[in-house]
Length: 133
Image 1 (cartoon, rainbow, N blue to C red):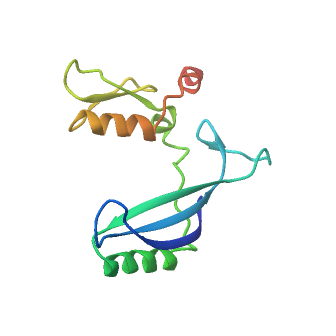
Image 2 (tube, rainbow, N blue to C red):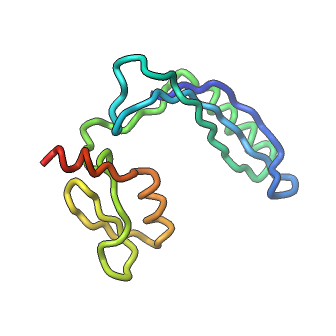
Image 3 (cartoon, one colour):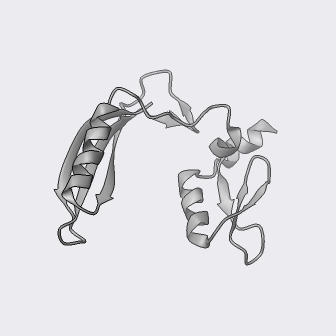
């Protein structure tokens, strides 16, 4: 469960008259996708940058983030072992796809950028996947 610490609005360095909302979260540390139950190292902070076309949009996004400050962002469900064990890119030759390590299921994706994004958000945990079998 993540906790929102700070929300700020800044001008975008990429586009003129555009803005970015910077949201800083406190994220608990975990081991192989499972939350730690003992105090080994403190929580880690993570900053999410949300690009906005204009200042009014940025103010609206920041207000919504502040309103939901007490509603924690859900961590990956421990029931979904497939995503915890991670995935690797490839599996269908030249067609963009990811292969889930736990089940060996090959999932076709739109392009290779999507496959790489899935791999980065669900890093391979081969040790955990082999321990399940």
